[in-house]
Image (cartoon, rainbow, N blue to C red):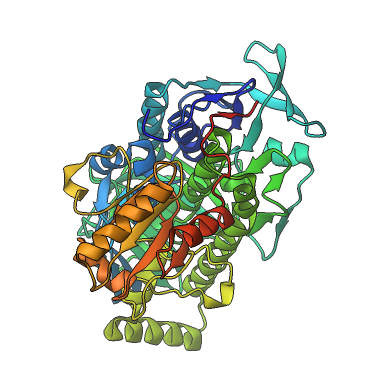
Length: 534
């Protein structure tokens, strides 16, 4: 147990409903903080279906918290670029390989079942297991703890009380339904047929490709073994019918500007690109994450990635509260922070979907001209690459000051923004040792000297450590010159959350002032005692 770490006792576990990638990430995050968890799922333990196949750089950064990022990186196919075609013309590309403020400058294309296998293995290593074919059939949230009724595989039921309950059970969430939370939405459904299978032809081996023309829209993503995720727009479809190979081949012949022959598909389905957001992401001690909280278009492959951000945002806050390192107020920020991010993703993906499906010649010409122009000027790479990578997620309370561009910025980082390339404590990967670490269960203070490092600076850091450590680690990061463009040239103390976002900035580095700042942004006033929250 590290200095300042707290023991935890709990009379009831946290109940996570839903064992997809999002639910298992949250369960792993809590288990690694020594918090008891039960995770249930109504489905069998394995599935060949893989709706979510792309993981973006920010998700891989966050997966370091549970220790699976590098194994996932080895398992999946690296996507160096996302290309856009209109007819036979290549409009431009987002080059993930040019991202310079992340240890993962690529997208990752992996069948969802493989991603789940990696996370499930880690879950077991941490002492957890998925209770498959176990459903939530009742929920009473009126008391001081959620009371859940579970149906086991043999049809018997179990009554249990949970310390907290997390709904990670998808767009048809039983948790959301039982809590009576409305799933609000707008816009008509857009249908996409999706499937996985071998594809032969002169296809870019390291790119995800979006193709548009008057015949429709199509997306292709390589798994690296000769098979691809294929997706195409369809005007109408009966959800109960699996789209045949011929439908995809017809779209390949009509929409994709290079010859491609599709082999036997492993599986197919129809995805409805809806825009829905839960009226609230929290009800008492119950929370919604992932598709249970929000769904949107599959354009840009943002769904699972947004859910992973939900899981990590809630995981460190809930874990810190239970452990006693954080105040209960931190949980109040979960809904507004993740709601704003989900609504932003929903808007962007809806725009991308409609942008790809335009057919009027004037609108097509306008779209193509805009994309080509943005590519020539560098705006496409500068703005869209960080956005698609989810590196621009910002938790600033003043939403009007949120900037889309953080990769080629002209100003230091502000409160709410992601500190580029943070490394959680305990991650000993030497490949990323040149970057500072942040505590994974409490707020960390990074001391930045700017241009005034010297003996007096060392004394100031020592004073801060004496006043704040071990409950709030103080790290002198002045030796990392790469941080200068993010932190500026003046001395400052940067309070960083366990997820790597900046909670506060103080230019004075005054211990008394910093203690007040830490309390204001959620540090527990009882952090010097063990936490017992039953």
